[in-house]
Length: 121
Image 1 (cartoon, rainbow, N blue to C red):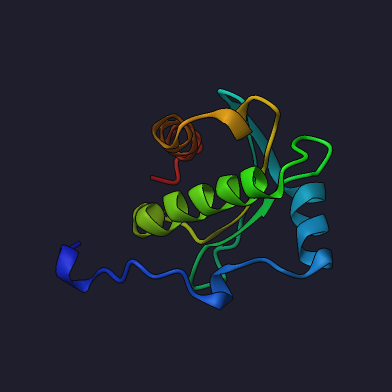
Image 2: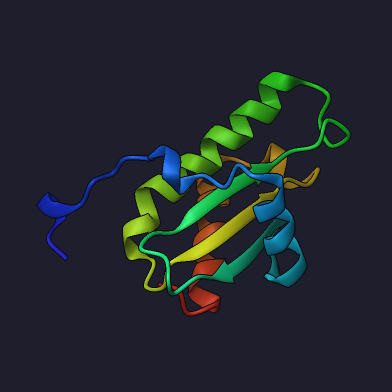
């Protein structure tokens, strides 16, 4: 794929925002865990694009600043790597006490390792 044709944007339709859709992926999706990062994924070949939701409980981290920083990092990792995903997939990323404190590079490596292990990239 030519890099000039790739749009590195994160559109509203690439978010999973409905509670019902999140619960569906959590119920029927595959749970993957690597290096403190929990990702539920559910392949949606009938869709044209992949979608993501990031869940961070206030029980994991009290500070809203830290919770939002984690969410921004995960969304950025998704935004920069979504063009590599072969099959449209719904992702739910859940923060853990370990993952919320990790550096961007470690989070990116963990997320990409999960995608690679599942044959999505």
